Image: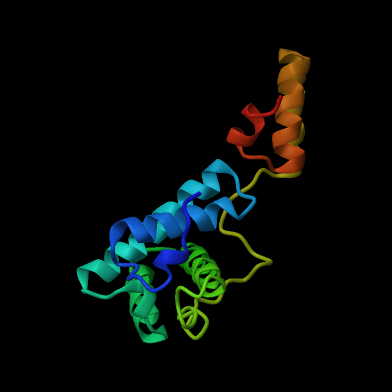
Length: 164
């Protein structure tokens, strides 16, 4: 990891500084490769939005974040917008700990309300899971074990195939 100390007062809008801070932030979190890639895209979207407006992300305010969030809400699900803003807030918290920004602008921003007890993702009914497991058992023990892990633990396929 690069030494970020000399960059603490540098503008984040300079591409390499933003990339270095993002990579340092990701390196300090326990995340799957899939989540890291999503967070990189989330940060790239924010930094690109700021660049298009001539705004240094280190000087962004909650008003700027609100403007970005309203743009995201035009076409994205509330859960996606909430995840993007959560990633952005975590990034700014990291920058705040490094004294690279004076405050976290996402902290005061409006975020979409997300019901954590409800998901738009359609899952299988219990009888469908039973039928799937029965079919997998016919295919063999490894197939059944893979399907059982996916069904019972809710693993992503990428997580399953990376198991040893």
